Length: 201
Length: 251
Image (cartoon, rainbow over all chains, first blue to last red; front, side, top):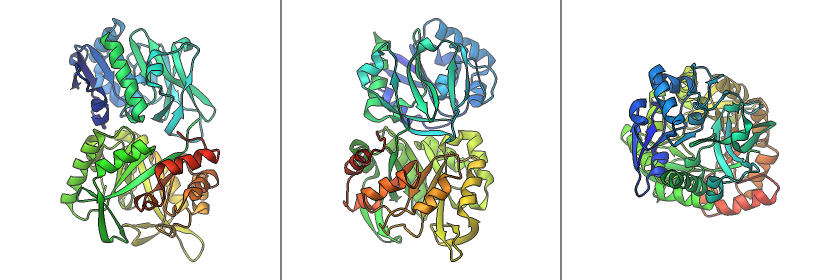
């Protein structure tokens, strides 16, 4: 299976690449959105800012990537990568991919950014990836959070101070996580592996 | 809710973890990658590498160490020491750091904080502040590893750093550093009630109650420990257990 990490140009991808490197998975890092969506699965990593990410996509790239994800390209968006799946962000930067309806806005909390390990509040519907990995406390580093129009897509929530926000969302074959599984120790790496198994089957 | 963090700090020089008193008589205590992954396995929430090298060659070595570490470590890694420019921060992030701390360089030129936050996001910019109480009862900022005094008020300076783009404050009490008599609770309280960003308390940890005190009473979001682990006074597991038993929410 060919897997592409779309690189917006900033930050550390080493741990993510290592977590994704499994037997039968070939990981490539792409800066060209068209190349990125030609893989069998796509990861949108979680480093940088919303405007930088949408600039890296460009108008043409945004359409290509949006159509590929809507057509069923298995996609994992991490932190900023989850936010990019939405329509737009208060962080600026114009239109996001628009795969998930809703906006990204600032956490309503005194302590911002949220940095550290937060607990996942699981929904009524059990999620296979969370079950398989037993990930219950995950590492977050963010000032912005997603506000989907349809909260039924949210499979896990977290709360920072009094603001409850989506920690994980699932829309068809597209998964978004506000936390960093590649920084959430052994359970986080298990989560990534569970996602890879799901994509491969 | 967010858990309280325990962060392990390792001094790195020439690609090895070293330990010493006042940078004299440094002793080799092991391989950074092996130690970092061991602390992760024991339950550390984050790792910090502090580069105490004097030369550019050693700095290049640290980036190579970060690269090797990032491929095996699956908790956040912060790199600090000798970071001067936004380009330095970029190099450290690309090498494998998740966060980078600045200290003397941001005192010399505070605009570097804003430049880094705009390029890489506030969440990876850590303002490292070394503070020492003066005779008038004000905490002053010291730079260059605590050797050079400044006129900056540490509490106001912390606030300015956050306003300029720092996403976290790593606050070290020079008075308590290495003393193992407990963190400087009034200093930690003064800063953590003034700034919006999370505060990491550093300097003075001697035992588990000190860690609990600074998180519960010092209002710090995270506690940094170093010497007491390297000298086998306690372990990460024992500290986390004590934190949990005290009622703090931990991972």
